[in-house]
Amino acid sequence: MRNFFYCLAVSFLISMSVQAQPMKLAVLVYNGGGDWYANPTALKNLAAFCNANLHTKFDTQQAEVEVGNPDIFNYPFVHMTGHGRWVLSAAEANNLRTYLLAGGFLHIDDNYGLDEYVRPAMKQVFPELEFVELPSSHPIYHQKYNFPNGLPKIHEHDKKPAQGFGLIHKGRLICFYSFETDLGDGWEDPEVHNDRPERRQAALQMGANLVYYSLMGTNK
Image 1 (cartoon, rainbow, N blue to C red):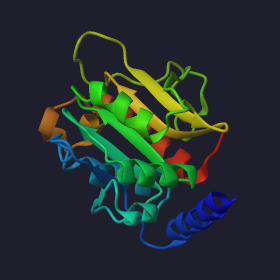
Image 2 (cartoon, rainbow, N blue to C red):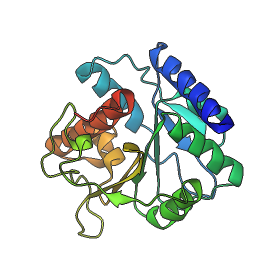
Image 3 (tube, rainbow, N blue to C red):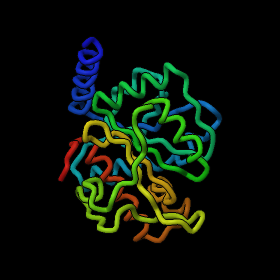
C-alpha cells in the first residue's frame, strides 16, 4: 500500500511537469562506459519537429538526466542511445522502475552495439516483464503519423529488418526499444549522416509518435 501511494504521488509530479512550461526532452545519462551522448543534435531537432507538428511547446535545448537521479520525474519522455556497455546499480534500477510505473516513458534506441546490455539491464528493472515485439497494428505506430508496416528502417547495420520491442505493464507501453533502425541518427542535423530527406522525415515522424504517446498515453 505504501508503494501504491508513493507511485501515485510521483505520477502527480510527472503530470505537473507535463503542464509546466517549457518542457524538455531528456537524454538518459547512464554508467558502464557506453556513449549516451552519441547523438547530440537529435533531441533538439525532434523537439522542434514536435513543436511544429504536434503544437507542443518544448524547449529545444535537450536535458540530460542521470538514471538514478530523482530529476528524471521532471521529464515525461526520456531517450536513451549509445553503442556500448550499460550497467545499473540497484538504486538506479529502482529509480527507473518507479519512474516508469508512475507514468514516465523510456525510449531506448540501439545505436548499434547496445542490445546485449539493454536486455539484462531492463530485466534488472522489471524482472517480471519481457520485451515483446510490437505488431504493426500497435497504437504506437498510429498516433499523429501512420506507419502501417511498423517501425521504419533508417540506417542499415546487419541487413536485418527494423524491430520495435516493448515492455508492457498492465496494458500500458512503458518502454519502447527500437532495434536495427537508429531513429536517433535520423533525428540529427541533416549533414551529420546525409540521410535522404524522406528517410529523415520518417524518423522524425516516428519520434513524434513516441512523444505523443508518452504525453497522451493514447491507444488511438
